[in-house]
Every structure is written in structure tokens, then in C-alpha cells.
Image 1 (cartoon, rainbow, N blue to C red):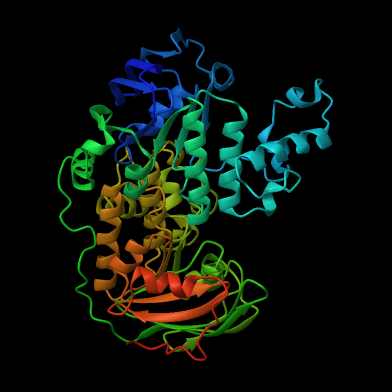
Image 2: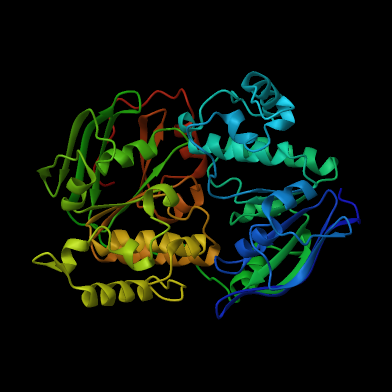
Length: 510
């Protein structure tokens, strides 16, 4: 149970970027031992607000008090020393360094007592922190050898290592498994008992109602309301976030499945996955479900030529294709939206225009010259179709919200007009309004006769959109279910490690 004592008080905070006012007179309170969820669509101002609290940005107006003391420095080190730590949605680690070196980067003197780094002592200290937080990781392991989920858990351990009084968690479960989510929630319980205040951002409604004591909603940079979590339900919260009711989250399919677009037979890659077989039809959404680490992304990378399979065949429209690189995949009519938009899907230092045309520049070139007017017109049209919120196509992608960055990735893929589209966690870190728009887009794509391979860790998403569902467990294909027979319980049964795969899976339509 949280106390009534406030540890963080924000008054009348405002922030503009040029003429765009992203925060407008925001006030916010956090109490000891409280989990305070901050909700809103992408672009609502949550990230800007969190970055100000973490000292990464300076507000134009307003004040922040921590334990009654005003914070005026507005730089990350000063805010960390004051007792505010932030777990970022995007991984912010140095891959060549170890887990321990990353966690205490810039703070090595705390361990060694001098600027001479004692890695042995540092790793011993970090192993204690990892053990206390319930993480089965080795402090001496290099970050580049960890999975995305493990990297996210290291981010969490790093924030806890500051012994902060306020911890900001920005989409902390977006890249971790259900088992690790349970560990995180146990850890949150321990932090609450110590009187730590937590600001929790997530687009997963079930998490919010499970973990939050209080919920504040922002919309278009304004404070919409703050209420006890047990005074709200799912529908009420969505309405406050988007300003309207979303009647049907998963739109019905109007597409008719046609001929086979992609045929995959006996596809294998060393110890990543084995004997994968399926057909993908025109107008079909084929879901791929499985636990984190099951091999789903590795299969997607093989189908896109980024990590070529060691054996097996892939055919597109009945013709065997070689997919040893991305260019071959694009030429074969395959598009791919990666789960890791920051490192794979986008070049965040470039503009919307530069990113969106990356996969289709040849279509805007003649005799070695780029026809920029045609490129601009096509990108502006695609931006409108995707309802991209920006100041224009010259805006740098890194300054967009997560949901709008995801729309840029989708736009880049669609600009090449692929017939087969692989979507790997397409709504990761995306708000409910943007999810609804992406789901409608998927239906529009299948209505045009395109085939979609949908990889998602959110079972309601898989069940709500897929015509058939393929289940992967430990790199093996254990089931191919029709929409009618699929359920969360049945999918989890086939996804569980150790389940022997069926002797033969029928790859055709049910």
C-alpha cells in the first residue's frame, strides 16, 4: 500500500519544439510506494514529460520538486544523483562492453574507489544486484551476446542500481517474455515496500490494471485527468486516451484468399530452427505464435535474406527463389517490418523522406538522376494514408514518437509495393489508437491481395487478425491451426517447450 506522502511534485510544466507545443501546463504528483501509470497515445507528450523528469530536456515553464527540493540543473547526472532513474523503451547500452561495465558505466569509482577500473570487483557487485533482482544473467557476459529481452532486463537492473527514489519505466515489458514480466512485477512489489515511487508507461492495458495504483492520462500535450486505477475500466481508459470510443479493435476481414504467394518447405538454419513448412496465400494473414526465443524472428530474417537458411526451399508465385540478401528478397516481392525499428528498421538521424524511400529509390530514378518531386509526392501520399503525425516529411525520424516511427517503417516497406509482407511485432510500443490504425491497414493490404505473415507475442492480436496460426516452439513448428479451432490455451499448449512436433503438418488452407 502506498503512502500519502508525495516524493515528486510537478507544477505547470510546458515545453515546445518550435511552434509545436508538446506539453501544455502539466501538473503531476507521485507518492511513496505508488505505481503511477502515465497513459496516452503516441504523440500525447509522455516521452517529452519523462525526458524532462530524467534531466534530458529542459522545460520552457514550470517546476519539479523531489522530496520538497526544487530541481533546476536539468541534466541526467544531476537528476540521477537527486534520485530519479529511467528505464528507456529503446535499449541504450554499448554492445562491446559487459553487462557489469554497462550498468556502472561512468560510475566505476563507486566500485573501485578510484578511476582505475577493477572489473573483477565490479562484476562481483553487479552479480549481487542481478541476483537481488531475480535475473539469471552473468555480469561478465557481453551485451552483444544477449537477446533483446535480456538487454531490457539489464536496463531494469541498471536503473535499480542507482538506489533511486523515483524510477521511470517506459514500456519495460515490450521486449521481455511472460516469465520475465512476472519477475518484473515481483520486483515492483519489492520496490513499493521500500517506498520507491514508480512512473509506469505501457500500452498493454492488462498490465496497467494489474500494476498501477493511479492513472494519469495525457492527450495532445494536455492533462486529461488523474484517477485511482480501480475507478476505471478498459473502455473508460481508452476513451480518455483517444477522445473517442474504438468500437472494434480487430476489423473483420473482407478479403478472399487466392492462390499461394509463398511456399516454404523444410526450411532450417543450424540450431535456430528446423523443418519449417507453410503456404501463404493471397489475401491471408498467417499468424506466427510462440514464446520469446522460439525462433520466430530468425525464421523472418531467413525469409527476408538477412540470415539465409542453411537448407530447404522458398518459392514465390511457384518459382524457387534464392534469398541470400535483402536485395534479392525485395526483388522477389517480400517486405519486412522488424521488431527492432531503431537498429534495423530506421536510420533515426535521417528525415521521414530519406527513410521512407530507402527501399524504393530506384523507382524514382532515371538515368542516374533522382526525380525528387515524384519521390516527395509519393511519400506525402503514403504519410497521409498512414495518418502519420509530423511537421512534414523533412522532420528527422528520431524526433517522432514511437508509434509514428513505426508508421515510417511501414511506409518504407509499402513504398516498394511488396506482395508478401512480414510483420514482426508491428505494434510493439504502440498505443491503442495507432494499433487500431495498423490493424485496419493490415486488412486493407489483404483486401488488395497481399499476403501477410504476422509475428506477435500478444495472443489477442494473433487471434484477432489471423486466418491461420502457426505455432513455433524451440525452433520447431508444432501446430498450424485454423482460426476456428485456435484459442489462447491451445496456442500456449503447442508453444510450451518440450512438446514433440506433429509427424506432418498440413500446410494448405483449412
